[in-house]
Length: 166
Image (cartoon, rainbow, N blue to C red):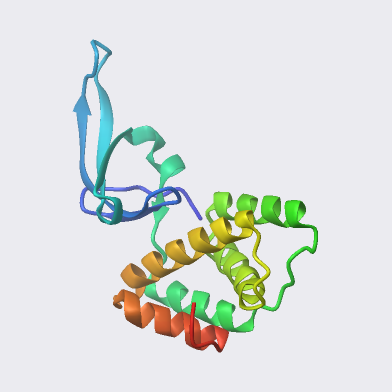
């Protein structure tokens, strides 16, 4: 995704904290350091407030996908048929790298691969962690992008997977 120009009130996605809102961007001085521009962000799901240098904001968060991309994510979930590596360490490393990259379509692919393994009861601990992280990010981003409740997004995901549970 391209570098974004964020402003107060914008919603954003942190790979560590989920969806947040930029509460303010203002010049501040901390600990006798020269004044710099800082952004204050609030992440509702974790009841967490962060203050980051405004200049590095695009390295820490990204814009949420717009609604049309949210629908494309659901379509990707339905159609993508990649297979996970059978070597658990290579699989875990590849999935972690994909999640860390921040691309929402890579997140969908990780989730789809691991959901198939989950249905077979074949998730190792690292797989389970990546499954949970990818699912949490997908649900939260789609809730905001599509303007739907968590339950509705879960149903969309289950329909895309052709399953009754997540």
